[in-house]
Every structure is written in C-alpha cells, then in structure tokens.
Length: 246
Image 1 (cartoon, rainbow, N blue to C red):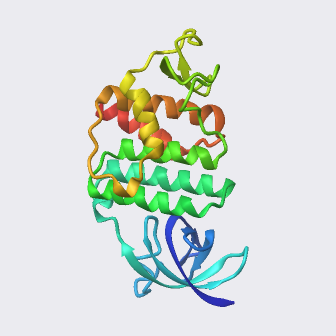
Image 2 (image 1 turned 90 degrees about the vertical axis):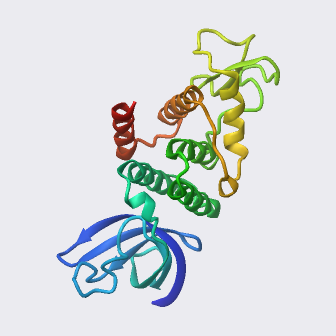
Image 3 (image 1 turned 60 degrees about the horizontal axis):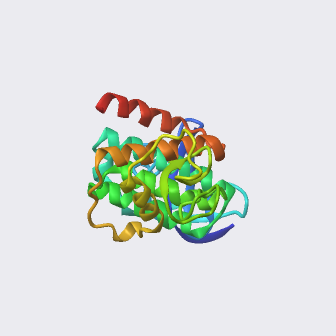
C-alpha cells in the first residue's frame, strides 16, 4: 500500500463492525474513493471527530487502486460550521453531496470536486441554498450529458422570441414553437443562462425574486426526473422542507 495525501470531502459514511466506518470521499486527485476508518468510533480515536459526512480536509491514506483504502489521519480545511448549525442548510448540503456522488460515478471529471466545494462554501457563507443548489444542478447536467438548450429554441433553433422553458421539449421554447407549456418570466429565461455561466466562487450577491426562484427550481426538478435517472432520497426531504417553510 502506498501512503498518499489527497484533498477531499466525505459524502457519506457506513458503520463497519462496532468501532469502524467505511467512508465515501470525493477527492481532487482520485475522484470518488472509499476509505476504511478503523476504530474511528472509539472515544480515544483521533479520527472520531473527523470521520463523518461533510468533513472537508487533507486525508493521509494507505491507497489501494480500485479497492477500499485505509484512512490514517485527517487535517480539516473547513468544518462548514454554519451549515452544521442549521437543519435547512444541512438538508441542502446532504442533497448536494449525494448528487455529486451520483454525477461523479457517471463522469469522473475533476471539475465536479471544485464545483461541490465552491457550492458548500457559499451555503456556509449564508447565500440562499436553493439558488446555489439550482446553479450546481444546472452545471452538473453537462457532465451527465443531458444539458438543456439555453441559447436558442430547442425546437427550431431560433435565438429570438424565446417565451418559456420546457423540460419536456428540453430547454428554451420560442413563440412560434410554443404549444401549451407554462409561461415563465423573462427574468427566469435570462437567469437560467446566468446560472450556467456564473463562477460560483465569485458570487458576492444574489437578488432573485421568489417567482423566478420557484420557476427555475420547478424546471430543474422536472428535468432531472425526466433525463438523469437520479432519484435521491435527500431531494424528497428538501421538497418536504420547502412545503413546511412556504
């Protein structure tokens, strides 16, 4: 076994025996890997406070290619304390972790790790978790190979006269190709493109009205259901949470 240092974040954990855990970690260097955290549940274990979901740090591991590696130690880079103090933020973060794991299993692209960390940092800083989630969801569709058409009408290809978004038709729809789809606001049509092109790490202000937020979220939720094959339990929890807070 080779001793290696990787930067990563724990996306989920599974108990193994009475004292250990198996951790799934998305890393900058190796993509998605599994780690055995031996004895981490023991009170005196140095891994006790770090071998848990949402730990972002530098991992020293005994690395095995395509097998379960062994965790030696962790140095935390960010503990996302503000997320962990808020049940709503925890819910969005959990979904983002689960989604990222699903995406990276289909496309082991190094940019997925960066987008994931940037998104969690913005939620931790206090930015609207729904908006950050939707931005990430849209960007991930490209890695999944099912990106919607958001630069022209998905039916005829015209760049003018766009009147709505349609998950069924696959993106923008112009006035000539419109049939009976729900009409969204002009701001929503513009925002969906901004979501795709924005650099998450450089977001300093978000000011989006409730109507546009809702329209974008409905579009992406339906789009994921139609085209990605990703049906995540954590997304159902968010939907229930939204019903309680609306």
